[in-house]
Every structure is written in C-alpha cells, then in structure tokens.
Image 1 (cartoon, rainbow, N blue to C red):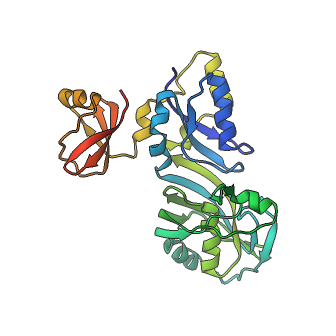
Image 2 (cartoon, one colour):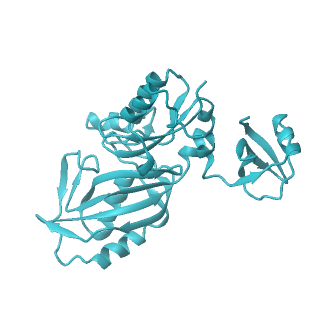
Image 3 (cartoon, rainbow, N blue to C red):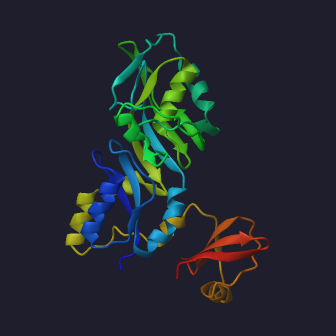
Length: 293
C-alpha cells in the first residue's frame, strides 16, 4: 500500500473531489482523501492523504490555512465572489482611507460568527445549500463560529468605476468562508462587496511554493519517482508533540494508557522521529486514540 501526504496545487476549474478522483486513478490506490475543500475556482494548496495517512486526515482538515486574495468594494454578487451575478451596487467614496480599511479588517481578528453563503456545500435538511441556490430558493442558514488569526491589507487602495479594490492576506481556522469575510468587511465599511480573487497559499503546514500540479505528479509517477509523497508526519504538524521512550512505545502498541507530564487534550506521540500514535488525555493519563505503527 502507498502511504504518504501529497502537497497538491489544485488548479482552477476542478473540485477537490475531482482532484482526489484523478489521483486515485494515477496511483491505483483507493484510500485517498483531501484535508480541506477548495472551491472549484480557487487555486492553491490542497493537502492529500494516501493509504495509512488517511487516518490523520481529520487533523489536517482542522489545521490553520492562509489565503491571499482581493476584495472589491462597490457591488455584491450572488456567490459572494467574481463568478456570480450582480446583486447590488453601492458607489465607493474616494474619501475612503486605508486607515479605515485597516481598522475594519483588524476588528475581525479573533473568534467571529459567520453565516455560510448560499452557494456552499453546507447541508440544511439533508440538502446542500448550493442545490437550493441553483433553484432560486433561499433557506435559513446555521451560524458558525470561526477563528481569524490575522487579516491584513497587502496593497494600496485602487479606485476604479465607483469601486475600490485591494489585496489581502488572511490566516484562519477550520470552516472559515473567505468569501463571506470579504462581504462582511464591506458591510463594516458601509458598502456592498465581494471577493474578486483568491488563492490558498498554505494549509496543514504545506506551502504553495512547494506544491505540485496533477500533471507534475503524473510525470513523477511515470518516472517511478515517489518524491511527491511526504511522510505521514506532515499530517500531524499542527498537533502538539511529545517524544516517547521504548517502554511507552510498547504500551501504546497494546493500547495501554500512559502517564505523561503534558497538559494538552491531544498529542502526537513520536518515537525516534516517527509519529506512532495520536494520544488523547483522559484525566491524568493519555490513552491512544489512533495507533499509527
């Protein structure tokens, strides 16, 4: 069985599921999954787990992500991004300052509440929101709490045809809709808005500069070069880690509890540089939640 993590550069025009299906055919391996959905129009890092590494997928999905993109103030769209139809126009004042924008962006840092966009895969009553949206239906959407670690402007304000555009970078936690963040920022500033560009530059510790496209991976497979497969340890890089000794390793292999001085709820247990288990705190002890040996 092939096992490892793939740092895939998902290209525009394909879903995350499409990317997984393509890799399944390339690798002739059924056990493959992705660590965090990317919208079809968005380019960027899509972590892929293969074989035994699929057991750490949930920790890759929960990890932080970094995006770079562009906000356009002045009109909103049905999809909250540039692919949608125009909904409302609000001409932007030339007096809008960078200081106002920066102050508004800073107000989103921390734990915030979002309402998922209608064009999203969130399910309501067993049906995906975009399925309602495609038939013109609007349904009540559940609020969700997400975490924004950093949200900054990375370019000057550009005014054009009663709109204002600027680039941004955001570091955020699981479940964040960056499209919605762009819309909510516009509301804060008093304008209709949408996300006009987006790229995911980091996810689960993987960086876009190191990512490979499907074509590049196919070339490596043809050359019997497995260098595109990263160790399973990449899948737990966001978890606190602890080093176990020989006796503790043996206890873990039998599913026994361990007495450790750590205080974290979850730990990645390592032995000689290799992750061997995910440990879960139970009172004063740690019990193996997943044994990866």
